[in-house]
Image (tube, rainbow, N blue to C red):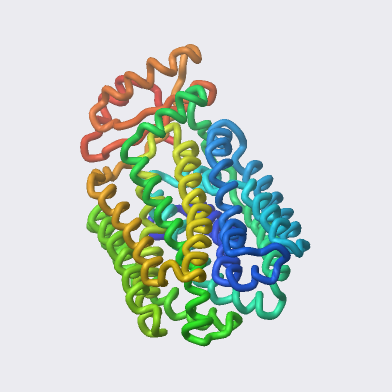
Length: 460
C-alpha cells in the first residue's frame, strides 16, 4: 500500500479485515453444507440449495436501502448494527435441528447487509488516487478469506458439526465489532448526496457502465456458489475423499489461484489495462468451469479446473470493486455500492438455488456433471459478451476544498461553476459543511481558474 498515509493504511487494513472475517463466516458454510445439511430434519436437495443461498438473497434485498441510508447516516453505526444481526443469525442457525431453522438463521444473518456501507466508509477514508489499492485490498481479503474458509470449514464441521460452524460465524462477527472500533471517523465526513432517494437510485440504475459491473458480480457469485454445491459431491463420491479432509484439497488450489492472480492485478493497475485484464479474467473463469466439466471424473482434471477457477475468481474480486470506485458518480458511492452488493448477493442466492436444482437433476439421472458445468460456463460467456462494450475507466484524483458560501442555496450554483473548470470531471458541494468534493484530471486541471472561481477555497 505504498503511497498511502498512516491513517489510510490503518483504515484499509481494519475494514478489509472486518470484511474478510464476515465473508469467512459465509464461505466456511459453502464447501460442507451440501453434505452435512442432509442430516437436518426436512432436508431436500432444493432446500439445501435454498439454505446456502438464503443469506445472499436477503442481503440482496437489504443492500440498496442500507446503501441509501449510508449516504445520509453514520456509517459506522450501520456497520455495527449489521454485525449484531450477523451474530444473532449465526446463533439461531446453530441451535436449529431442521433445515427451516437454518434457513431462518441464515436469513437473519443476511439482514445485516453492510457490504456497501463498509466500502463507502473506506471510500471516505482514502483519497481517489489510493482508492483502487484500498478496494483491491477488499477484493484480495475476500480471496484470502475464501482460501482460509475452504481449509478450515471442513475441519470445523468434521469436529464440531454444523452447529460449530454457525457458532463460529457469530464469534467472527463479535471480533469484527472490535475491529470496527479501531476505524477512525473520516477527517472530512461527506454526506454523499443531496438528491431524493428515487432520483439517486434511478441515476445509478440507468448508468450503463455500472450495470455491466453489477451483471458481472451477479454472474461471478452465481457460478461460484452453484459450483460449490456440486464440487463437494465430486470430491467425496468420485475421488473418495472424506468431507473432513476436503480442506487439504482446497488449500493448494485456492492459494495457487490467489498467487497466480496477483501479477495480473499488478499489470491491470500499473499498465492501465484494467479492461483487457478484466475481460481475459472472464474467459479464464469460463475455461476453469469447462475444464471441470470435461475432467471431473478424475481428481487431476477437477483440480486443474479449480486452479483456473480460483485464479479468475480472485482476479475479478479485486478488479470489480476497483472499477466500481473509479466509475461511480461523486455523491452516490454508497448507493452504487449498495446496488452492486445487492447484485453480488442476489447472484450468490440464485447460485445456491441453481446449484441445488442441478444437483437434483444429476441425482435423478437427467444430466451429468459435465452438463451442469457447461451451463455455468455458458453463463460466464454471456457475461464476457456484456463486458466487451465496457469503456476503459479514467484515472482521476480526488480534491476536497473548504469553501465559504453566502447561503446554502449557493451550493448548486458553485457546483455548476466548478464543472466549467478544465480538468474537473465531477463536483459535489456540501453546503452544510462548507465542502466541495471533486474528481479531477491532474494533467488537465486549470488550477488558476479554479482559484478564481472559488476564491478563498482551501484544499483539505
